[in-house]
Image (cartoon, rainbow, N blue to C red; front, side):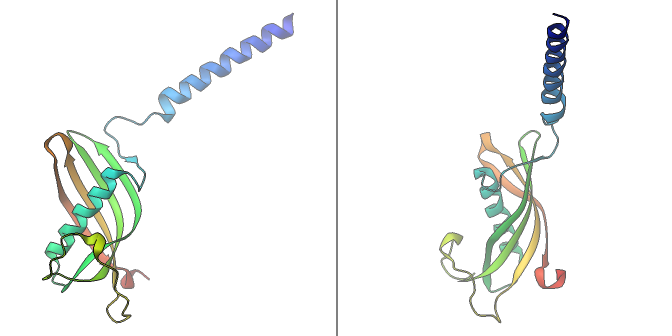
Length: 146
């Protein structure tokens, strides 16, 4: 009988420990940056917004689009702040063309024209106002990082 009381006590202690871990360790801290899936629809929209900002500021004759999302985080504070590490590569679409949709722009195949940048994008989203804008971006040529 004594063994069953000890076993029951141990089960209660373990259950309490599991509850503590779930409540205080596994739960994200409100307002903190949290990892998020790179396939999340909000992340994909934020990547596009960041890439459009890069394209609008660059003097390149060609448009760039995301070739990889390396890291994605979000922070919920009066909207959603996305913090992204994205690789963008030069496409075959020229800026002066009618290319509003980057998904129809294939990547450069000419080895001389191929170029990739590693970018840090911060994008602010206010979903209830259907507003999204790039608040910060910094890009470096991948060639200089090797």
